[in-house]
Image (cartoon, rainbow, N blue to C red; front, side, top):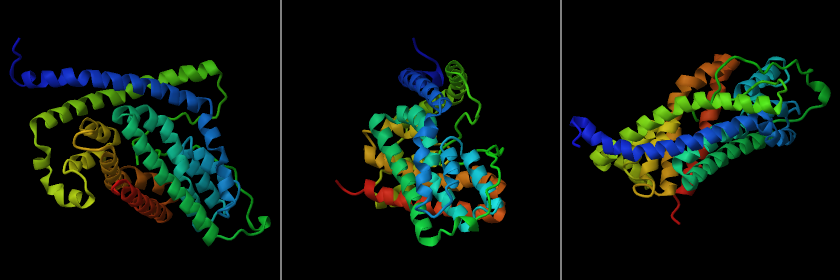
Length: 343
């Protein structure tokens, strides 16, 4: 049967895309459910429990380890603790900046369970997904280690009596979570739940996330597949050739980077069909990391400024943003250099 007009061109694309979206939806549903179960049973906190051992080499009070552990479950709560330490005089500005830097890897840990494993790896496939998540983990770990080294070199540990007593900590600051990837649903509650209640809560959280992610993914897949079929991407993105040639990346990197600037999930969905053809696994990951750098400019205005200014105030919040952004750019550049070295 001949389909009228545009539907005649779109129908084959829908037939091609539907099984892919369905497979991803199943994996995302399973992954999000297991992620919420892990959070509900406290697995995230157990994984990050060793963070307190980083505070002493960095010449920070042991209590800061509590904030770093908390960051693995909730960025908002972890930053709220550090803000309380600073306001109570337990930490000065330099110590707080170093503690925030050390938080980086532990903030990344929560996203492994809530975003990277259940959402991004199913979209990108196992090889590229693990390579990308591994690169992001190495970047986050490098920043955390840089924070420890900065504390060891720049801070001095005084007698215990030199520090004022720590005030009561309130981890319930009502501000949005801040991060290089999109918002994630995390259970921040401290109430003890039965195993059945944890599983029930995890199931209740899974469906809303699927309703938010899957329609957007379906739309992106349809649009991208249509573009791949009907457009010469190298011609459309010819303006990017000087930069992409410098880095050894395909011209098709530019639209991927542009999408990544606004939405990490959609950016991954955009590049996924081109892996193995236009992109190798290494160039795909390098392109996504470049997209992460561009996204800092967008996320700074959308999330970082409101969040950091709300926690710290404009003056110190600006310092936190500058330090975070500078370190991310430096370590992403280092990761790009490693990825793009000829093998």
